[in-house]
Image (cartoon, rainbow over all chains, first blue to last red; front, side, top):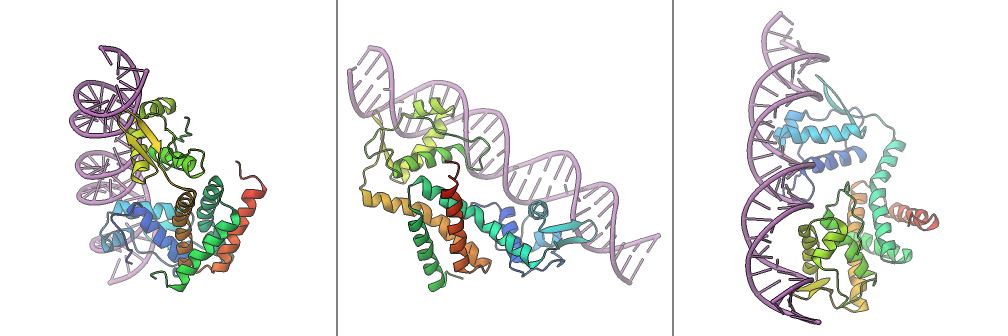
Length: 131
Length: 131
DNA sequence: TATCTGTGTATACTATGTATGCACAGTATA
DNA sequence: TATACTGTGCATACATAGTATACACAGATA
């Protein structure tokens, strides 16, 4: 499994790895009970230390997105479609809360904030958003 | 001038100070040409090092929100109401861009994202949002 | 001249992120 | 049973960022 890791990112490597795998799980690209690459293998594939992968896996396990068994490996945790959707939303909520909080601090009207969001959605989906 | 600094915040102290002063400028609480507290004074008031305040002021100056003159002090930069509104929006844009980006990665429909934003706005403004 | 102001510079401490390496125990398979 | 995987624990080490302390210097003002 290859994970794009940007060296000059403000996010530490273990966070980028965490985010990438979290994304794969929440989109269904990785299904419950799917095996993850072994820690050593993933470290080798992505040219980072085993420590870094361990850190990422630990965080994923702490959030109940995966579970690990010595001798066996690490696997995507079990949850149904509803739970998955919940988790998706819980991923967006903090960002939106911060945005609303900041908008309110600046006395920006809610309607204006919604406008801005729709404008950015336009840009993203119309022009392709570099995907 | 007192600035709430949370020790256990993921944001470094100089960032919290930067954000707080930036907010005061963009809301108009601090007007163009208003003098800022001296670096030494602000450090003393908030129990942080001079270095930390210098860092915050440097960033504010780099973004043309303030300017500093040796022997005189630091002052809020000059800009009109339109420019101020621009700056406000430029503050929100990165957060919204990240949100839209993440939503798209998760295959969350734009309409659903807008719904979620409006729901959070409701929560914030209805219940007071701990302000 | 005294006392503010910002600025430059040096040193040092702490925490975090990351790397390397070794050891150990659980699991599966030949 | 031997081998080769797996995750885990632990120790050491290094780089960087954030922060603190301290001294010196030059500009501004009363």
